[in-house]
Image (cartoon, rainbow, N blue to C red; front, side):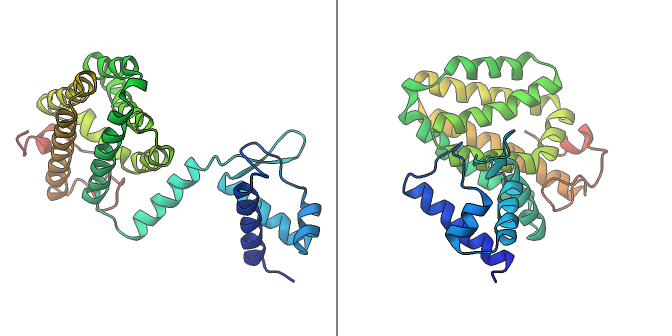
Length: 253
């Protein structure tokens, strides 16, 4: 009799092997629980629970005909798992920013290698929302511009990881942008404009410099807020809702 953990591992190996050999791909219908149990010589109940685990992970989903399809739609689960890891390991906001900085820099390098394929009009539209939209619209456009850069890199894994990291630190980022000084807003607007112009002109160094300034500014703001005990050490937990312009004016950006 196989335990649930053994059934999970066996089914994972079966799915991975089938994908590697081209037997399964995204949206493929996997064999029925009965067929899997027979093929793997396992108890059907153990197989059912293993399938349910994969369904909860977003790897499988059940369609209207009760068939299980291979979806690989794991972005939400990846966010949840990464969030829990960061909280348990007490990862600081600065460390999250360091990862984001590195990812943006590498994404920009990759994007430059395929610059002729990029939809710069879409980035320009986001830039206009950052410049001229209301606070909420500007915040949404700021997030979308980072996701655009990940997509521009052509690296799907990088995009999924960035979405997960953004979800983790979004509370702090939104507070910084919503309650920041006008000087902060202007500096971040100019940084995004510089990034757009770097792609337009083919100037990689300009874009890398913009990313450096962007994250230097964010890290300085976070450090000032932590010193004022406005944030706890966990990535997305605000220790106080009184995130005021006074706290951000402690640093000169």
